[in-house]
Image (cartoon, rainbow, N blue to C red; front, side, top):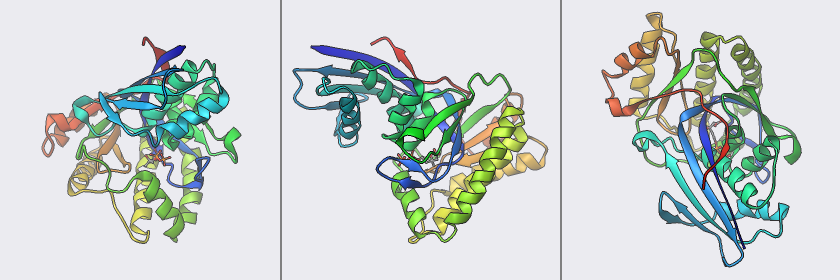
Length: 323
Ligand code: DP6
């Protein structure tokens, strides 16, 4: 017998970053984080459990991919329903211009809902968030739309995301400046672990990020774009400073990242409310208002092509779709 389900999950960009685990097996983070789920970038995944299959197979954008990360994740679902056998998984990433923004966040959030539904489980969003976490930390947050907090917790049971502002009925958008569509130089998993074990600044990161997080949640509740942007930019720069302080050191910045960052800083000195953040790659994401984004796009266009500048708005949480 066969059971099938499809789900769509959107990616999220962290404003206050997760950068380090206290438990690598259970994927428990060192600190809480805050993100914005985006409308523009998402993953659709179909999972079919079928008793005739003799192994898991995974197709990403029509290409067969090895299942080294997928099978251990599906094993968690099979633990919840031992009746579920092997699976076929079909995933497609929807990213404008192959922007290099398809993430493990949307991938594992979509897989958590599709696989658990196909296995006949009816998980709550909290359970889905805990399950998605086991695939990739950032996926914990992609279960929900809008602004989302991941509460670090102390065990598998209490490490999950909660929605802070799912509807987002105020003026905020993100501009992604696509500098590189390639694979990361150092995966986030490796990078964050190196920082935890070698950076002398790591304890200060934890203390200051916990402070940034409470302040940023307050800023979201007050719809204070300027304060939220300031906190996000400073938190991102501190994360990247940790990378430079690791042994051996590493950095995700490219020369073009610095060009984009300088354009944003200059606009700010001219009174435009815009801030940037960077993750485990050179792409720069700009936090701004819809009202001011045309001016920001114009300024970025002096150094980047129209294809490199992608506009994104707050997006929804994970949902089931037609197979
Ligand atoms: C910089 O979620 O990709 O984007 O949990 O090891 O899969 P794993 O790492 P991942 O790390 C994301 C790091 C980040 C910050 C963030 O999303 O909070």
